[in-house]
Image 1 (spheres, rainbow, N blue to C red):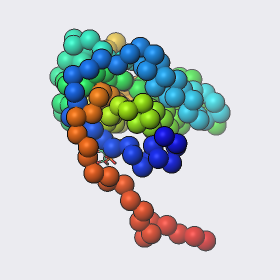
Image 2: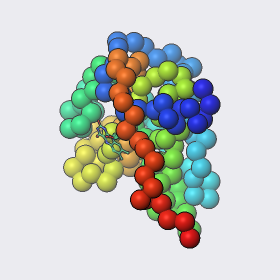
Image 3: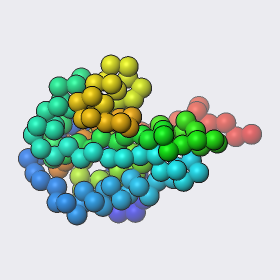
Image 4: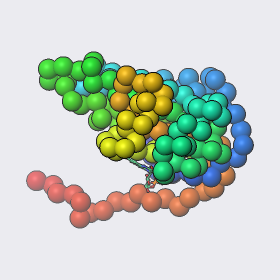
Amino acid sequence: MNVSEAIRARRSVRKYKAAQIPDEDIKTILEAAMCAPSACNTRPWEFVVLRSDEAKQKALDIHPYAKHLAAASIGILVCGRPDLQEGIASGFFPQDCGAAIENILLQCTELGYGSCWCGIYPGEERTPKFKEAFGLTSTPVALIVVGVPDEEPAMRGFYDETRVKVL
Ligand SMILES: Cc1cc2nc3c(=O)[nH]c(=O)nc-3n(C[C@H](O)[C@H](O)[C@H](O)COP(=O)(O)O)c2cc1C
């Protein structure tokens, strides 16, 4: 699968088959995340893999729109490190984490896994709750649900000419 195909094959998947993801695939997914561009190459991110039932349950107890994590193989907390950014890089961590997240989604697609981006930051309730539950000093930006898909959702993205201006 090439990049163009992966972009168009990606879907938010919310139904999963019971399955484990091998460590090497988790590493490949996280490596893809860390290949993302970032402001001044500050790489202001860290990742927490939720694999145990206890860890997944903690996230399920907090996130109101991530119930599909229960049947998925893992969740990945993508966390921002604003402390690594100063000067002209300052404040760009949500965008940098967004780029890392999209790489995760596309790598999952290529590996045959389904995934779903579940937003955390800047949710005023969720963000501090995730920080506390997982003892984070970083800022949890999103929970990415990953697993073996048990549905084939229709494509929701499309080209919209009204959103384009050529000057
Ligand atoms: C910032 C952000 C937050 C999202 N949060 C959630 C969420 O909490 N729960 C969920 O099921 N999907 C969530 N989604 C997935 C969107 O609903 C999904 O991307 C959108 O409906 C388009 O569908 P597609 O991903 O299949 O193209 C989120 C997506 C983004 C980019």
